[in-house]
Image 1 (tube, rainbow, N blue to C red):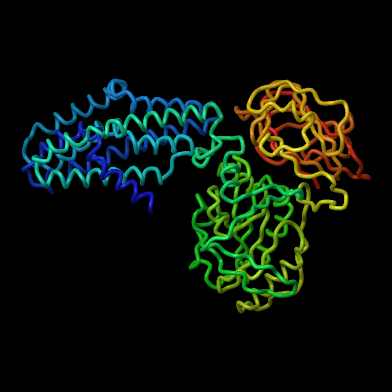
Image 2 (spheres, rainbow, N blue to C red):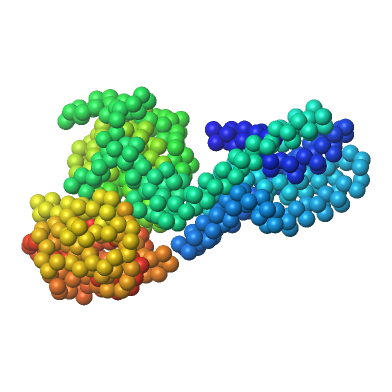
Length: 591
């Protein structure tokens, strides 16, 4: 709502901007004619045409980005060109000449009859909108930039309509006041030209920053196409997150007014820990319309913070899904809050596919901006919050385990809410593959990030070259939990990308299972790989994403299980060689 209000006010202020100049003659030509039959239809046509043309541009830019990574570069070129039109009026005039000519012809045809006909006035408004759309730089530039890099949506159209309505409102006031304000307006808009040029320069600087991979700060909040730990870096600054050795992510989030304060839980008791925070702030809801306090009134609620490449989250899912199914008809509502760790997890299509593959059919809020995360003062993936039918948090659990205790909490809260026939029995979760519980007694290797922003135990440490393609040679021997690169790699802040065939990663580990978060190249084509354990094919120790001979391929951005040992667990040397270039590696996890 606030964005719509700001867009409307921005449109109102357009009357002191240079982009209003081409519109003024058409508007003030209707001075002295009945406003309802002449002025109002003109302004309506102008606003609708502007919103339509700008929306088509935004949708086109977003569609280009969805093609692949090369589409992202086309979108950046598109945004850079728009920035140049703001900076150089002569270029803008040349590029928009076809629209201006079309608008002029339509205006002449509709204006041949000077009588106040609503239809003719509306057509003149359409022509005026064609003249105005290419030059309304500042707000249109920002909206098109966001749409091109994040994808166009109904919100883009609503913001454009709000902006157009604001501009039409200010013009309507000017029209009602009369043509005498025309000269005064022209005198007041000189400074606006400098604002226009400044915004054009800022847009070009933003494009340069994204193209050079420097978008690790504020720009990351607006671009899901950016990589290198951008989103996580900003959230880390806001919420102070730091990685734990057990594979979960912890955030030292400072207390603040309006944020739920989690009390220490006492075994066997269910104290009131706070109120269930609002669930607004999600960029999208999957499997459900947005849920709020009214929709959840009288329901027992389990809120599960997760992200789809997190191994700890994946291992809790069989229990969460089973609880949702077993207790749905007795009054339990399970809500997943997907808060991304890596940039690719902000892509809603990736999350949608992962949910389908994982069999998740309960509501999931896409919390790309971490608004729900901060409202809960959350610190972990996964994190479970249990609320009673009165909307009060009564229990929480962070990480894996304690499933029996969590289910007994659900049963108790359902009974308190008046549910009948709540059984005392516990579910028997069917966990397979990566979702199988870890062999905790044998896990001696920590979660390890490959990007330089959080990389640890890389050897030789001095050889890591950030944000450039470099050649690496792993040492002959590695100590436990040390890792290294071989071949040509481009190491970014959150991932390392193989720049040539035969590039490999070597890791000395101690655990039953080894997982690696991987993604294919920018073109989306599968990348073949070969896994070795102590220099040999894994055989019976192969993971579910690897054949016994060690072969496999990276087909999508997700967590891959590469090793699952069936015998005794000892220190082993793992290596993965990518037979094709382009694969990206993000993080190792173990089980």
